[in-house]
Image (tube, rainbow, N blue to C red; front, side, top):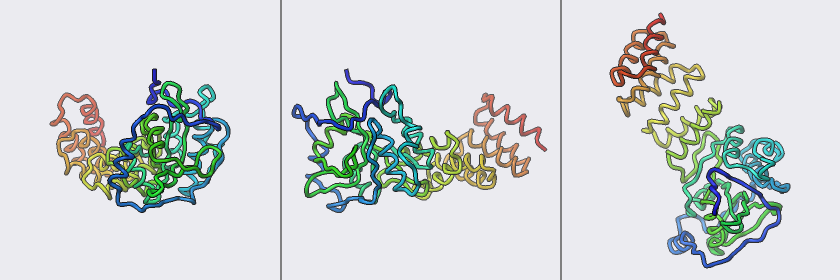
Length: 315
């Protein structure tokens, strides 16, 4: 039985491996890509992405270090290994990789699983952190790599992999080994940037994760970045308000909450948050009016009742 990769991730990253070609598995994305080439350059190679040859079972730390250094933050693979490597598994879990990226103020955005999206990210200068299963579904060999380029004419991907600074893998084969890993791929960007193919949902989900682990300042900047691309996004306005409030920027928080309420005035929880921002700004009457509005929308909410008592006591 195939392991549940979403929960178990990941086992060994082999330094030496053979790629199993068995069967006649199709490569539908490759066929689509070649039949309808996207409007990207025919050849892209991000040769400036640093390369760290991996130690045994340390493909994740080596690959992650390459991308983080490419983004301008100096870090050694061993530093990352301390954050992500699980000795019992002889590998690294995806959840730990995402958490480690956040520790370096990277926004780890999960991509949509499309081969074309990988090419579009590379075309704008974004290397992609990918997971491959280089063997069988029933006998997997998990391996993290950095996708640094592609050649449409030669029909191959270009990667930093294991102890190899540069390898190529044909589109069809890459698709098969990537498919066996559920098409898992991350674009790691700084907080002033958004991956070219990212949806609002995927990007903001990544930012919420940063906020939840205490990277408040980074999350605040990333929410502001999100609003440059998606100015009517309710979650981005709310997130900006929450992170600004946590940083003591109460006027910014008020403005963000009001922008969110312009989009959806029926969100009681945003009225609640606005009430607290107004209280911090010394606007007691407006604060009480805001929490009263939250209770009008959700009269049985105990949290809002508690807020009313708390804010009513503030003079």
